[in-house]
Amino acid sequence: MGRTILASLVVLALAACSTEAALSPSASASAPPSPSASAAPSMAPSVEPSMPPSEEPSSTPAAMPEGHPAAGLALVQFPEEGSPDSHIFVVEEDGALRQVTSATTATWPSWSPDGTKIAFNPAKVGADVMYGVFVINADGTGERYIGEGVNPQWSPDGTKILFHEQDDVTADPWSIYVADAATGEITELATGFDETWLWDGRVAFHQMTEDVEGTPPGSLTDVLYVTELGGEPQMVGLETEMFWSPDGTWLLEVRDGVVSLATPNAPGSRELIEGFAPVWSPDSTRFVVAYDFDENASPLIAVMNTDGEELWSGAIGTDAKWSADGTRIAVEAGYPDQMVHVLDAATGEILWEDEGTDPAWMP
Image (tube, rainbow, N blue to C red; front, side, top):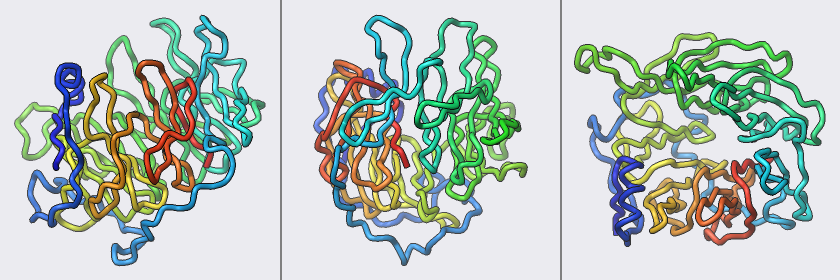
């Protein structure tokens, strides 16, 4: 039975508090529609998939590894009751929590691709104090300041860190920066928001752009751009979100509350489910997607494959992160307490939970 959700997350959250929903994701995908403004991005991104769709990887999930189910997971906790200081902890092989940060309060951990360092933001205290980007060794040594900004993300090769700076006072457009991880040299990339690395080292970001062709004069349009470092941004979509698979073979598009599957450089897309916030598995064969809210306004999530088949549904969580081997998914669960859950990626079963936020798996 198809799920019906509202396109706006705010409206959905309000509706969830007053209305019970009994919805489930579609069991199979519809046939690919002909290209249209609602089914395909306005402009196809100029990218080459790393493997043709005829050579898809196996969708058989990897076997669950031995050992503790949360080993290698970083998360943020408040170690002292009543203290505003939060710190990053890493789950050890035996399940013990090891504190990594101590000198600087910490949020939003981001592992380097080789697993030796963690980039993070300190907790923001007061209206006049801006976030900063820091890097620390995984053993807790060598903490250093990179620059002012939020949401640090390592490049696929581990040589650079992407982040943005926002001004809460003036509401000026966010400036997106790239820092050299070794030297700390910072280069401004663009103004925009929701920046992310692509698999090939380019950066995708959104920008509110005025007077886009085909829109009313003087209007602002949410435009998705892709750019090489130092290159000219290329417009690839209007009023839509795109999520490239880790291998570059697929695109998940989210438009008007509908998640569709497309192939780069190919026309048209195939609607899979009404939902939002999809997150690809490392092997590009599955994705987590939020499809509804429960009675506590907590997002309900499902895992689907690229054929549009639901593998499981009904768990709650946000900020989904796949383990490197694709066997586990870490999520935040905010009700009744702020918790981190580790789910079995094959079943949705909770394997481990603890107080915390901002989960991030070691590569």
